[in-house]
Length: 205
Image (cartoon, rainbow, N blue to C red; front, side, top):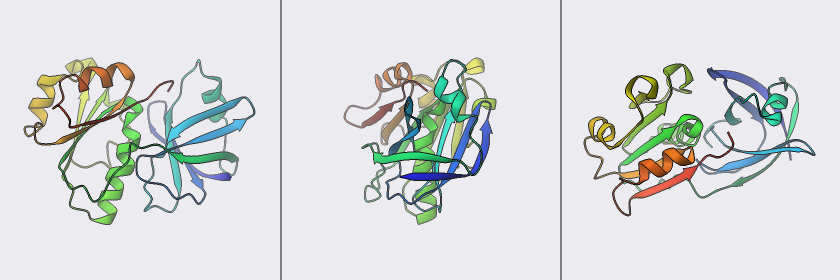
């Protein structure tokens, strides 16, 4: 199907959200494909919530990416070809287990969708969010996400077990949801409580 760009938002340094006019039934945390032309196709997590009246994806610019260069040239009113949704890294609103969301870089996108959904639906679902970024300048959605702790790696170092224990005292009781670059996901889940981890790696962003 085709979707029209209705708004482009600069969220943080080199990070943009593209809001689309399109009808798609999806769950918080799912992703879809966006095709710019025959040679340029990429998958993106849907960063909007099903409760919102637009479809949104958010991504970081990379100079070495022909896709990102082409995407950054798109303007309001342009149409994109989309296909989806896909993915099982999704919010189950019937599960009220307290959760610890751990995001690395652009891995914040599914959590923005989930937290917005929980807020709009007024669900009783305790969430703590730890967001690891190089600096606050690269932290997308920081102003709108509640109960958020940003870990700036250039000042504090990488998000490790010590920091998680410090910023989330009841981490053992929560289910862990981890999303970000493969190395970050692997390192973080290595000390997570056994049997309490759901993760998704972001490759090629």
